[in-house]
Length: 176
Image (tube, rainbow, N blue to C red; front, side):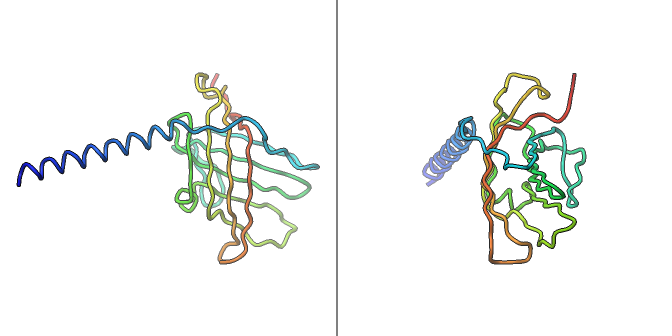
């Protein structure tokens, strides 16, 4: 009886260890092709930037924190749309899913003082990112992010909008 229990424990430990390792291996293999980047729409100005050791609060204010923070902004006359993506500092790649989006790691802000719009909130989708220059210093790196985010009016259970974006992000800081 004891021998069978020990064997079962060893077998379950082996299975758990292998599945944990295979999940890490899959994360290390995130691939995004540097093709078909999303162009900036005509008559708009776009920026794709990131900073390190940062965070964003509930009022969309950047603070010092423990994340790598990416943001994509699109501006036109009097209107600006911004996505903020909060990711771990470690590693040369990452993947966020619905759980992280609902946790608040992806935020959307639409700034339009003259518009009568309902705020939208990220509720589903994914964001994948890879460091295109992993051997370089942080202030000389560039990241490729691919995302598909489902936005929904806050407090509503109906209409959604899906935004897809694939672009290269550059550092917004200087170390040296």
